[in-house]
Amino acid sequence: MTKREELEAERVTLQRTLDGQRTQAERNRLGQFATPPRLATSVVESALKLLPATARVRFLDPAFGTGSFYSALLGFVDSPHLRHAVGYEIDREFGNAATKLWRATGLDMRISDFTLAAPPADADSKPNLLICNPPYVRHHHLDRKTKERLQVAVKRQLGIEISGLSGLYCHFMLVSHSWMADDGVAAWLIPSEFMDVGYGLAVKRYLLDHVETLRIHRFDPTEVQFDDALVSSCVVWFRKRKPMPDQTVAFTYGGSIETPGCERMVPVVELRRERKWTRFPTKAPRPATAHAKLGDFFIIRRGIATGANGSFIMTVQQARERNLPAVGLRPILPGPRHLVTDEVLAEPDGAPRVEPRLVLLDCRLSERQVHDKHPSLWRYLESIRPDVAGRYLCAHRTPWYAQEHRPVAPFLCTYIVRATGRPFRFILNHSLATAANVYLLLYPKPHVARALEANPGLNRQVWQALNRCEGSTLLDEGRVYGGGLHKLEPKELARVPADHLLDVLPPSPAVERTPLTLFAEAVVRDAHPRSHRARPKRRRAAGKKVRRMTSRRRRPAD
Ligand SMILES: C[S@@+](CC[C@H](N)C(=O)[O-])C[C@H]1O[C@@H](n2cnc3c(N)ncnc32)[C@H](O)[C@@H]1O
Image 1 (cartoon, rainbow, N blue to C red):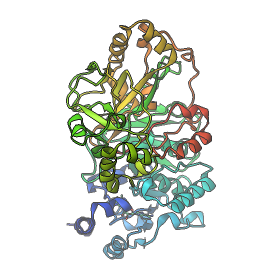
Image 2: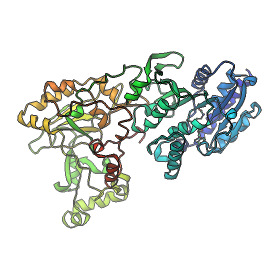
Image 3: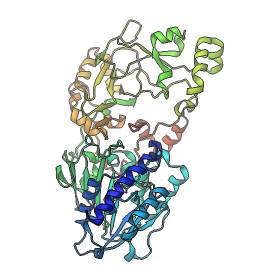
Image 4: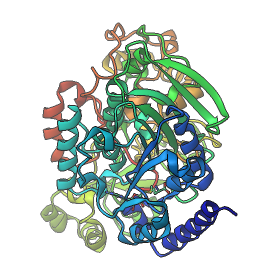
């Protein structure tokens, strides 16, 4: 065993020990998910190939951990070729352990918050090799002050507005820009989510406008790279150099970094137009012409987020036992797992003919009215109040037991699917049941509503046409999470090509549209499930167009 191999073996043991001393919640808070040694070696080797062979390496890992990348680097670069190596680590225990482990190698280990550190002033000290698996800390865990500080720093350095919904990894990437030497190379191991979601726009803009992006390798999400973090990840390699207008980026997917499953060179001009970069390399760039989309026929909303399904959704039997009055109840469909049929028939009273029979507690009467007129409902509300009324969604509703307004939808689509399970399903709903946020609700636009009214059998034809939407197109428009979980947000379903619906429905007056570029649509951000009160402010800020396109984003871990 070489000295380096001994140190690596020690590092791996150390990593395991330190991981074992932390709870999952603590690790989530600081994004402490180490890079597996083999992956670290591949990332380092591939990045080194992008540096001139004679270059003396000035290395930086801004989120060092125990040093998986540094350790791999020492396997490739001998000391005459390693001029300087710096690591930042916020966690004192990790930092101290790494300092001790790597002391003899000359590592400059700094135990502090990288995002607060100042980059070297002189160009010669700036790193020419930056390799990082940044902390994947979701924005919910960043306090307001930290977010604002990072947003200001990114704006000042790059002129990019970064969304408040961005995870810490996005900020890490963008604030690192000023650290890098010109022509220096970076490799970032990050969640591939940025390629598809609204907050990823700042990262995409950075990769298109500020650096020469060389390659993006996306791992197959069914082969999760980290056993302990449910994320689908990718590696982004770039050089700090102004990009040329005719630049192309190598998109690779699946397999390994060395031997990807497939590959496609994508021109930067196509990337500017494309909102969903995960379409590459498996799919070709889309034609720039406008086609009919589902959003031309339907207004699409996610189903109701109750904030406490266990308390607000119950069986009809339970509602009876609780003696709850009809005024506070609405029929609601069971989740897709329990819904065996794709056509929901109705009982004479409008209840869905499905099992289990469920109702949703949804009451707009004030507390005083409930108290005075419906004592059994009042008793039930009092029994759930301690556990439920203070929850985020409930606390932001008035009254806290009134649900979002979601009229009955004649068509629904399932919201989440597993790659290995049933594909997205469209449901034809004849009943008066509403649905929870495990479904998307499709409300006919006025010209479709008129056609449906004029022809009572048309709803079945529309449903059949909806089911002809290609499964792969639906997956393609949606977003994918680690472990092969696919989700379709309302805006994404609205973008699904739907020329075939024109076989049964009249065209929308809005079908003739000019395609927008990625950045022209920057204002159309994924809306977040906040309070009813917060919404008007966001609407005002984002403009009229956003009003019809609200959606919510949640990660599977929520
Ligand atoms: C995803 S881990 C990567 C660790 C290591 N580089 C690897 O790849 O195995 C991210 C590391 O960044 C550290 N970290 C989190 N926030 C940080 C910050 N603001 N500044 C420096 N390090 C930070 C965490 O403690 C964690 O060790």
